[in-house]
Image (cartoon, rainbow, N blue to C red; front, side, top):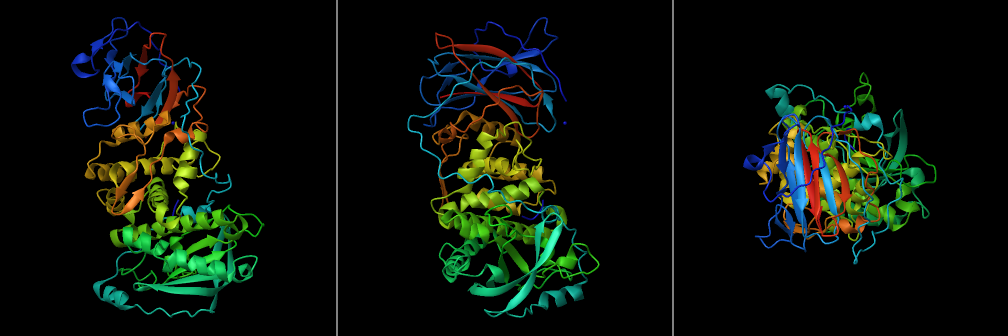
Length: 553
């Protein structure tokens, strides 16, 4: 892959409430003896007028069927008290979600957690074969963190000379060369490989190189190489064609003398990163240092392969059967997005427009989801692994804009990116994704994401994060508009529906209340039971910048 605060408690007030009006605005009031803390009520967050599945009959009642969603967001600069009063629930539990939509940590009030429901659909399907816990791309730090500052533009005369220099010595099948390979955080090795397969797509040659010691009937055989060529370059749903047609070329004309020629072929280099007889670990990477001409005086560029290249692990291909091939095809698509972003954003627009790690990685994870039905039919790594991990860790109280690469961490970045990215593309479409990658409205990645959502007709980033967090309630594809992971067909691309109910056995609701909520989407989901009359009433303290959402289904 390309790249790579407060503790406090607020007393909670439990009051007997009989409320019938929406919260906020003219419905707010000041509670006597509460230090002039404003008291508000939840508002309906969905509507049944458009024929969707909204089960909110009003601000204080559930219709008895469908999915009811109510919410209130504290946009003030001080604490507010939010009243929740819902009737008509029968025995259905209420899932409540605190979500911090601001940009700073906020203290959580003290709460007493009641026993949690185990919510499981009668028609629950089982998840596809789970990815092994080791199936995490362990990118070396120097590769992920390399975010180069491009040299200054050349003079006009030199610029013309560079653009005219398209000479690249073609390689013939059977050719050999050595490749610098980044194995871990501190080790770069030279590996010998042979060009085994080759194809031409449009104006670009695509070379498949294989490390010499990995060629053989019990490793990467000729039959596997033929399959790889089809999946990478020659098939109707080949990864290179699908990615470049959707988001653009990974290399081309530029105005920098320190970069490789515009007509460079794409070299896909299959190597055994760590020959330990085990699949997974480091699956693959794109390192933009290879797009620079070699510089012996530079600690990174002295290892440049002077190539538009992506490196893919071989042991994962042949040690775990068809799942390994599927995962590596998905990995290749992911890494190609990093290559496209480097060229289209860093090189063509300027290094200040390079995405920060969270958005760079989310954009690459999203392609695995968007193209899944074409390049890995029957398997979707985002559905099968990323969202599953988001429910299981749990990864709810996390700042999605703060990238964490530790697969064992609660806030593992790929799980955050997969869950949010899948939500965004299903709510706003493939066109939103394309324009996100082209968006240069700011050099700040959070601002870019906010602007891209707005350009797609979506709500504020705060509302987006609140609605995304509501997925902790195991929302089905038929959730009200703006919620869940519904199916979508856009530009001929089918995005499958993702049913939150299939993760019921994986969902790991937190058992303790955190001292604070992380910014940018940090959330805390929990559940409450209605009384014997099907009524639930309670009042909660809500810090500034925090939203409270209630879901009944």
